[in-house]
Image 1 (tube, rainbow, N blue to C red):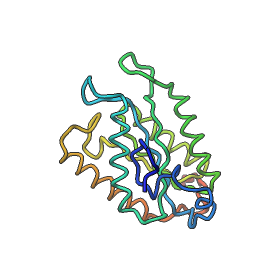
Image 2: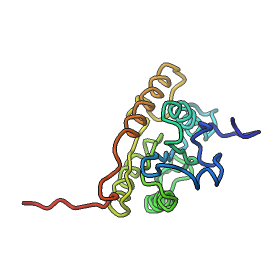
Image 3: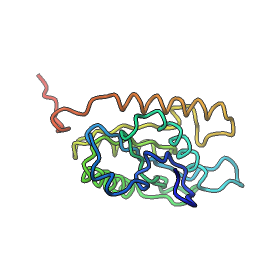
Length: 199
């Protein structure tokens, strides 16, 4: 059940802010739980659309996709919204170093809570490279298991069009990816990164 008067689109059972502290404290199998971080930009399908259109699209897709993930095996964080910049054609741009640091701080907080498997689900083409770099760095530096999903790879370019078929296909693909990721085993050696030695 959604909190009264909630304006957020989310899957109620997996949205972290709607969980109670007692539930999180007693959470089982933290090593296997997926923590989903939605990362949004500020694209809009047309000039009259609000700048939060991209976030609303992504959270709606995730709300449906998380329905197929086993109960109590996934948590979704509140969306992060920025565009890697600077750019003269976009508002609210963030320097790459600052955006990287923000993602790192969020992920380290997740790690401090006992969770190690994080999925970046990104809706902005301008944030794709940053997400990939941050995921790699967090894997190497902090022994976290990171996955990246970009909406463009699911057939949605820039922002989902009004075509409901495209949106439905993207939602189905997102569901399958999350279920596949969930089935993967946790990293060995508690995620410790072991550089490969050349013969």
